[in-house]
Image 1 (cartoon, rainbow, N blue to C red):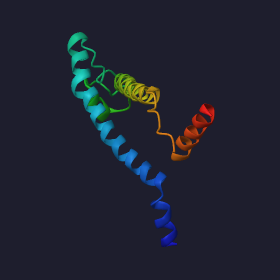
Image 2: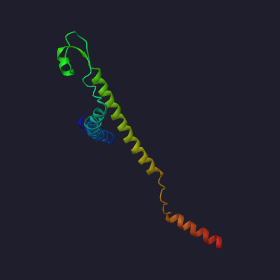
Image 3: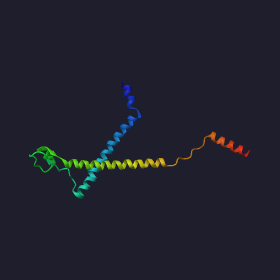
Length: 137
């Protein structure tokens, strides 16, 4: 069983998938930082669009003005936090779309490059010489 597992784990697809997951995790962290540390603060400073503390108290005991304290007091509907995460998701999805689009453009450019003419084989050269000699005849 151990040998079968080793053979399975060493197949190209499994190794490629493991590498993709690791790179994807690292890329996800970079994009999350881009959104959380650069894009959202700029948006927040321009229009004050920090929705993370917007909520609706679902019990009468909720009198707090920020989400953390309100959650301690009772059930809350944290619609602002949901909206902020939805905006973050849309930004991350757009950035990933742009990266995939850019990579596919590079791939198309590589495919569009004309192939270098290959050198004819020795047999083809010899047959061409024979044909030319017969024509001269």
